[in-house]
Length: 326
Image (cartoon, rainbow, N blue to C red; front, side, top):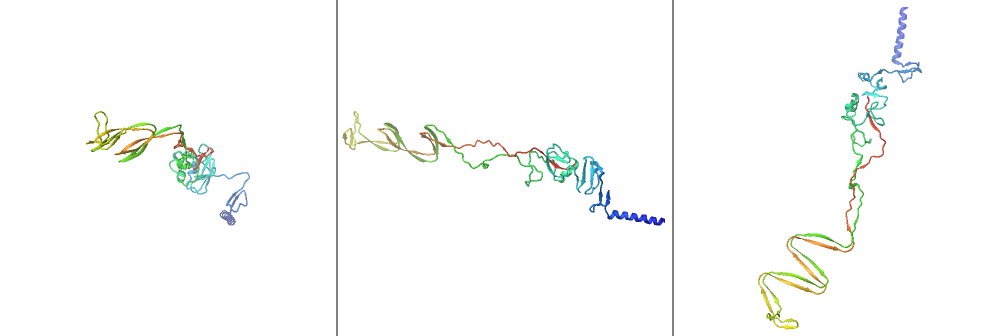
């Protein structure tokens, strides 16, 4: 009898053990879902996860991927993804970026304000390092998110620009300088080496010219008869003086360099041709007279001051955060 009872109990234990190994377990139900190894059903109670503080959770040795606990420090469910703990309250992965009107860190979201890593928790520093960050957090102040091919999390560029001449349209500025009445301009021309200048002078009305002639070497001059008292000379060739023809002429011989004064009398308007010979490098002053109103070509300045132009568009002011967990 005792033997039979023992065999019965052993059979029951075997059946129960086999059921645990090969079947699903249902609590509150006799027909658990085929896809679940354990199904809980209740209209009055819930499933309670192990409750740990953040320190206790982080102290779990070699947590399995998918391990879940309720963190009583953050009042949220956490799970381990094989690399680090993830807060389900945030529903974010480390490295996610978001904008918000919060002014400080919250629920694992860290304000990107350029502060040093030393302000972060040990876990946050470790996650930041895994993301390739070091030293300081990026400073997102006045920065815009863009995928521009630069280093991830780098903040580059400026929100202002200064236009250069090459940025301007191809426009020619013209202007006119006003002038009233006749006026004169003075210019200076420079010349180098021996050269000759030719020109002409114009004169109107009766006038006299006085000049000096210079001669070099022995030469002679034809001399008319001087009819002043006791100074008459017969010319060698016939000469007509005051209606009289005087035969013969006289000449004077001069030896060496000397100077003759020459007075030229002119009656009526006439023109003289003038040739100026110059030896050696020299400069001439030139005066140009202009009569009547006229205009000059001028260069017009744009008047710019290279003031930077703000190219930032109209925007909503928010803060930028990166998720690094707690």
